[in-house]
Amino acid sequence: MQSKKILVACFSLLLVGLALPTYSIPRAHAFLATNGISVTVSGLSLTGYSDPTITGGSTVDLVAPGATVTVNVALFADNPTNAYQRNVTVGVKFDWMTAYQNASNAGPTNTLTMTANQEAAVSISVSVLSTTGTIPHTWTLLVGDGPQNKPIPSTCSGSIQGTGNACVILSGGFPVEIWSGDQISAAQAKFQAGKTIGYVSSAIGFGGSGATTTAASQLAQARTESDLGDQSWTNGDFSGAKTHYQNAVTDANAAASSLANLGGGSTNAGIVSTILSGAGIAMFGVGGLLAGIGGFFYLRRKPKA
Image (cartoon, rainbow, N blue to C red; front, side, top):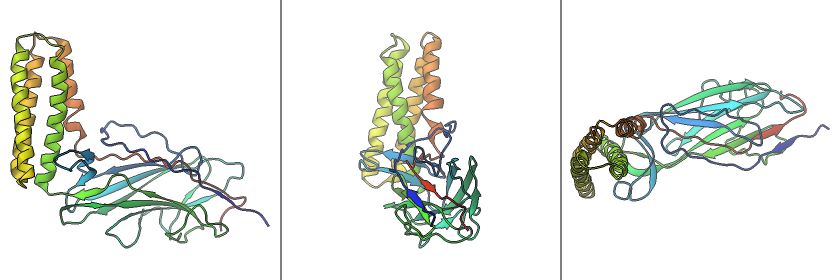
């Protein structure tokens, strides 16, 4: 009787907190012991966000109530010595769901057919709850390989022998919390203000006199507004916190502009350009997660039925 070998190497999870829109997803390898599966998540308001006041120091992904979160999975089928046809299913399950939601082109009744050296991509869109609250939600991703157009048990794992099923179940990244519009806007504004304040503070250390004094004053005002925002947040006044944090962004941007006008220097202008275009607004609206599954290698001597 021909033997079946299932080897599931170690899992490795690499989380990219805030992915820029220009971030390039590296080529992913599934069913290959030395590489992994590439996963990105869109629809989040902030990813990998942590703040002593706003999140209590916890690191979370933030999403608006009723928003649609899309999990994009890229797969690559390797070319082993005994090449075979893969019949792939890909599903996502959040903790408020009772079953995995599969990709339309990679489900139990319409498995995704992959052959050696073939790449494929699937997407799964899930609507989050309409309620809000700082309750951490979890999610898992299941990538399975089994008989064509037949279900793979959700309890499957690489240790299953002789059943024709193999899968990897990957826990999602940071906990997902569903926040109100004011809470999310406040968090985004504080994040942007903090980044700009940090860059301007560093730039002032390399500047001279003149406009640096003005920038320092504006920077102090930005910090004051941020502190006032913290107090409002602690008091449960999320609307007030949002206003103060947005004021902090305005003051921090003004300080950056003052540096740009310092002697008309192109160096300072370049620094400010980096602050405004690279570290601030570009990070909002798109959540990024890059997950590396360190090994999913399933080797069969003949194609599955």
